[in-house]
Length: 92
Length: 137
Image (cartoon, rainbow over all chains, first blue to last red; front, side):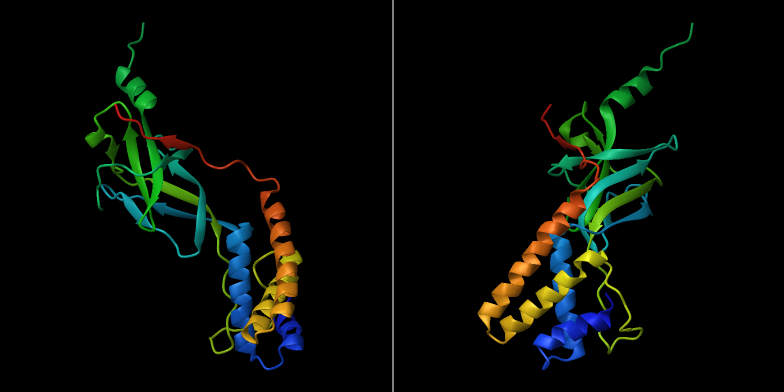
């Protein structure tokens, strides 16, 4: 369904709302839908840096499913998630 | 007769890379479960390619005051759920006008969509990632 059609359907109930107000409501609706259903997925790649432990995450990420790591042998393997975090910190 | 590379066996048996989430970042380290707690985690020692697979938020629909806005845009979520997005927008509109009965009616429709969306999302998916618990030596 195109955005124009969505706006027209909402305007049947709320003719007083502007197109931008309706688009904002649709964004709110689809954000909630995706957060609760996890219906959309994606993937992203980056390279580690020597002695750097933390890497920022994209804003669009709701939840990480899995992480692959290409090791020194050139093999890409799924690495495990640690429950909690290391006791001794390396804030880099 | 070949010699045994005990160092490699030790590495394979006790060391593995792990990840975790902390302060809106992903932490990656080499876990050596046979060493002291203080030295158990080491940051990556070089350049390695990491791929993150994740559940994502939808790309926002552009309001008409934003460059590139287009009324022919189609939401990123699968088409069978578009009507539920409309239902939720209608519900939110009725909440703004303080018409709770209509809001409840459209909320029910949206909740039906949530249920269908969860079923859709779980269909044909592989199981989630493993988790490992830290243990004191």
